[in-house]
Image 1 (tube, helix red, strand yellow):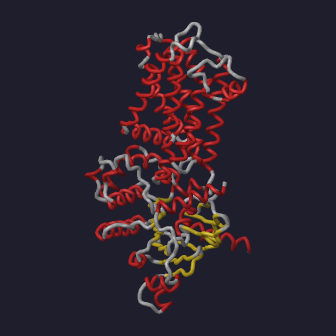
Image 2 (tube, chains in turn blue, green):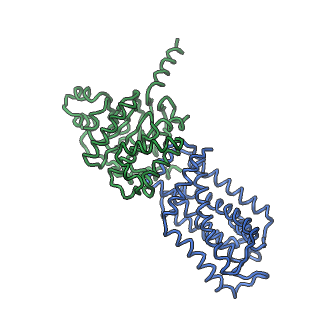
Image 3 (cartoon, one colour):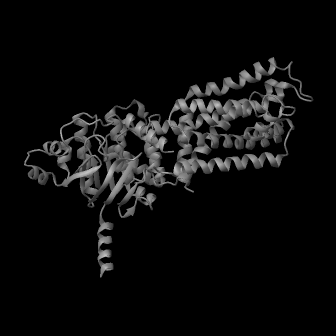
Length: 247
Length: 278
């Protein structure tokens, strides 16, 4: 493990992220649209016992900002390959695993911060989060961000164009988001959908976030953690393999 | 006795800055590098010439561990590029043909990050950044974003970066391409002083024959093979011509190559080839 390399990649990605002011706009407009427009608009059609619809989707919207920001952050890998900076990193005397871990941590950090923007909307839809709930929610948000970033790294490492990444990530982000229980409850769904939902890591992430913020969960907590951690480990291993192989 | 001879041979390989033996690289069955062998002495200024698409950049990519050869062996500073890539990378510096700076960062940030991944302690890092920035005349611009720099300034910054960790072997892949004569002169004075003072081995590819004339030895590569290798003057005598340019045209012919001269294009070809192989 090369901490200098992880540190460098992390600081560089964070520096770059905060220099790009337009990206901040997207991370604020997404939750506004979903929470305030969809949340109030669909309230009448959805009835979930014991919880209002805008409360129900709140953890889902956090997960949405996490997965969007995490996937977008990994575009930097394609960007760096296209503009040559990746070569500067690849010829440096650092292990490939540290490059991947550095990328995973910087992507998770950026996504985590974008997740915080959604948290700031909690008072507007009258969700009262206790300090204890907040302390549970924050590390869980980072975990979900980390899982999404590790998936993004595997996709970006195999991609050679921005356009390709856009198509693939839309094919992945949207279904993952809609089939995760983020915007509707996942019980009482047709059998095949159920199957897809159970393969989706975001399902377990949303379940954990909903447990921490509203006290509702569909799966046992240990199942959630087990699935997320094993998924992230497998993705990291594939990512390291992709970076290690030389032609 | 055989073993002893073998040891002597190993010693001489270990003392070379670069030693390449029967090195080949194929992309989809087409040989980009075709069984080349050569050696570069320590502190030598070595020119590596050839038309576009001759296999120069592929050779450099193998020597700095970015690509695995299909067959053959290559050692840099005594380390095998296949089995100890990290050791090789520690001891080399590279100025790539295509830009490799992060243009959204400042000059200082680019250098500082470079120092971090080459494991320079903070104090030394700070001193080296000031030192190399002064040497390439960019000290006053150190907090400017690289995107605002001219082509020559970017090149100087890349050279400063490549030298920051005091490499033993410096690879320069067409370092002065697209630069005005003043900047070229400046960069060359700097590289020559440095190679003399610090005993750095310089491995240079270029299309400018006046730059190749400065080299102690040049190798001319074409279609993946080394067609000739010697001192510039010896080559001129051998082909009975007065300039290295004529030597070059003599051994590689006059027809224009369908080489991918544009950097992005070449990268695209490389990436597509890589993609197909999967």
